[in-house]
Length: 357
Image (cartoon, rainbow, N blue to C red; front, side, top):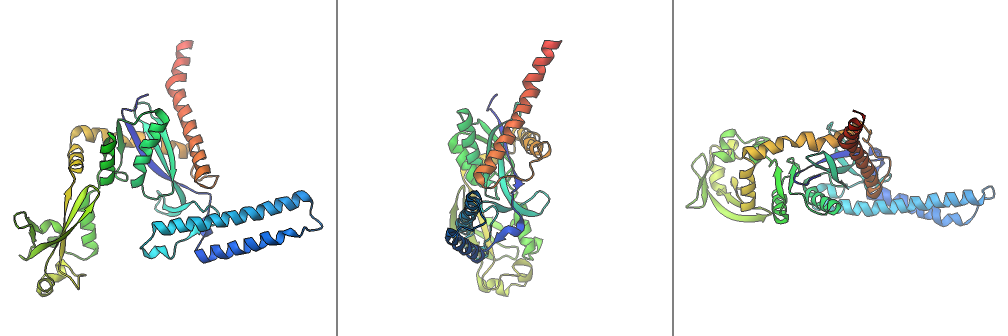
């Protein structure tokens, strides 16, 4: 088996928890206080209880208390992730499985879930890395996937092939630093920008592509002939975002304001110019080559097959256990079962056929 090329993909699998098990902090705290009071009151044994029954009851109550304490701890982590957003105050956690997170499913609905990550060696379709994440996004899962493969087999993949959910400027830089060739689909920034413009009510003739950049003056000229001057820049991983803005009084008096910036009532129209890092530029150029496109076209059949097999053949569409550690055990058993089936296909059946022929 070779690690010359590894395909990676993620899939959401439902947790052993219902959507109605999620509660806000005040409800969790109230349940925890009730559980603590119940633990304190357990000192008086009931006359009709045996020692075994009493011990079982006490154990169940203490486990309930520990579960609620864990729920409050997980709620704090959820709030950290949502910090600075309106969702921070309304954050909720499951009382059944506090480590589960609400994630979007393939059918478009939402459910308590875990994000399962599988790395598949391309030449024989063998799973070489399996992990579980609480993150609904895949961007942060690529580097841990590379590290798992290296831990399992003793060396890094030479090439990782992923879809657009894993392909970010940050990952391009980190994969370059690790010496791993990345093949992936970079998001269509122009299409995303067009979607934002449409939601804001901007007419197509005033989309960013219609603004002309003047490199000598480091400024933009809008379709109405007005100038947008450089106002600052922001450094992000793999890119520098330069901001340009027109004067407020100029935009306020412009007859095209309703088509250009209808929702902008306090500032002039702005434009952002992205200057990509050399590594990101090189990656984008590589993905335009026929060789990279050919490799990427193989991704779906290899990377998505183990996910589909585990769900269809083993029926693992919802976990039986709770918590990241136990859920990971279920994933590892499923991956081992899949690999044994692949070994039967690749080695055992050909060997049996050779001995019986």
